[in-house]
Amino acid sequence: MSMAFDVRHLAVVTWGLVNGGLLAAIGAEWRHDIPLPQGVAHAVPPAAVAIEPLPDFRLPPRERAFAVALERPLFVPSRRKPPPMPPPPPPPPPTMQKGQFLLVGTLITDEMKAAIVREVASGKERLVVEGFTINGLQLERVEPDRIVFTQYGDHEEIALKLQRSPKPAPKPAVAGQPPAAAPAAAASGGTGAPAWTPRALPPAGATQRPPPEPAKPMTMQDRLKNPLLKDFYK
Image (cartoon, rainbow, N blue to C red):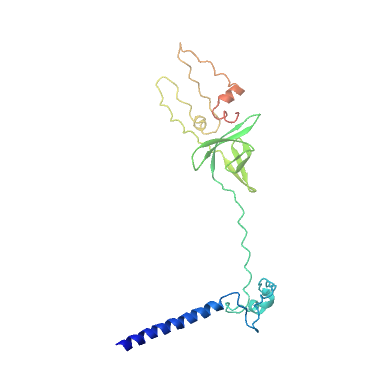
């Protein structure tokens, strides 16, 4: 038992001595005051080298480098250049839209000429003076029974449609009074000459009404009061 104990202690001592020697050698190598052995050169830093940047990358000209691919494209069945696209057709010229208005009446004075028209879409009546425009249409001319609109080199003439009143029914004959005037042909026996018919006299004691006075010409105040002209003279 004593001998085994001594061998174990001897191994531990030996291990400690070996490790201590190694640590001492490593420490000696790291000391700065120990001169380097002969033949070992000091490390010299490398000299600075000027590095020039490469030029920017650019593709070669397409017409020169890819001339064959341009002349015979790969994705076209005919291997030929497609024909140039035709230019788009020009837009159609604007045309005049007719039938927008109906002529209700005309107003012709020494100072102006105007027309009263009714819009077909809305049914509103508007006053248009000659030379002015409405919905893009210019009132070119105003006549007593017609007007002319112009637009885009075209014109539209609108006539005034007069609605005739129905003929009154003949009054029945009253006893003691002469009959109403008969047609001229029947009264003259079919000869076509007008026949004279007696005029019925008013009964005795009846007062005769004086003839109506002629209408006076419109003044500027009357025109300002007129609802059709008040907007024009504002």
